[in-house]
Image 1 (cartoon, rainbow, N blue to C red):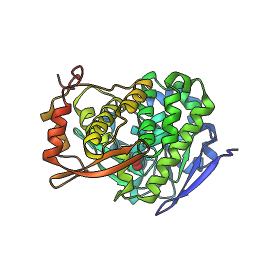
Image 2 (cartoon, rainbow, N blue to C red):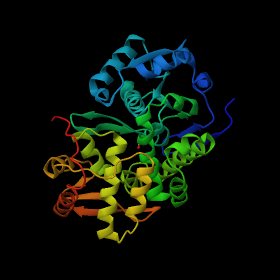
Image 3 (cartoon, helix red, strand yellow):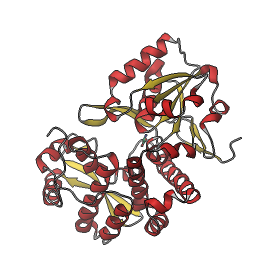
Image 4 (cartoon, rainbow, N blue to C red):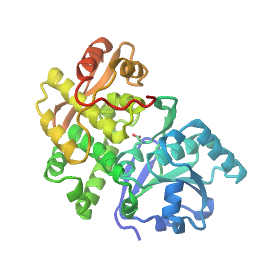
Length: 353
Ligand code: GLY
């Protein structure tokens, strides 16, 4: 039996977090006969036994598959299996799988119940939480989507045992982000450790994951439709997303560079003094802290960012570690700052070079 369950109430429904769960206990939270699992080929290969007896749709892994044609394939399969509104869709995987599953579940027959078993560190602390589920359109990440909460999140920490090396830093980028905007205590813990020591300390790691999942959930619960506080979760992501779509960078690497840029912009805007501490922590978790890019290319992506409002951008800055804030920055002023920051360190590798 799972014995660390937390219920959080969001606007439309409660979400149950089963923190001490296991994929093999999925039948305790959803009716096996009326559930369709969506996962990817890597997970299916690594945990084939856990999927036995479940209707399962297996996706090709990778962000490039987070597109409408994958959703169409899922929907065709649901129609073929005569899935009706009494069914639940469960996404077992990382952020790509959970996003697509939540989106497909939200639009199929105008909405099925859905839940997630996040398998990556990033999905456990961030991607599976918050209800934003969507797909990419060309270079524009998450351009189409919904905000709809899952009914449950089942945490199986053993899934991290097969997490690829590079995925660890991706997850830590979001953990560091949460610490920067909201959680000085966690930032201090992150300063005392590094990637290797935390991986060797499963108890500390699990409690850090739990703390981050609940931190994000509380922020989202207070501002589910992103009118205010929830925007803080975009710290590092404005420039980060633009870099990620233009250069060969993982999500965490791009967000790390975005956080450094936001710290530097904060120095001028808010008097923030701890860029060096943030830089050091990012390095401790295997993340890059400098890279040169083409400011014209990046500005053309930023102009399409969802956080742009007319000629200004909602930019997330830090007042101090543990306290983020949102400021409107006029696009012209932002462009000047981005240009000034665009030539630090070795050149990033462009995607279509
Ligand atoms: N699914 C990620 C979020 O809602 O922020």
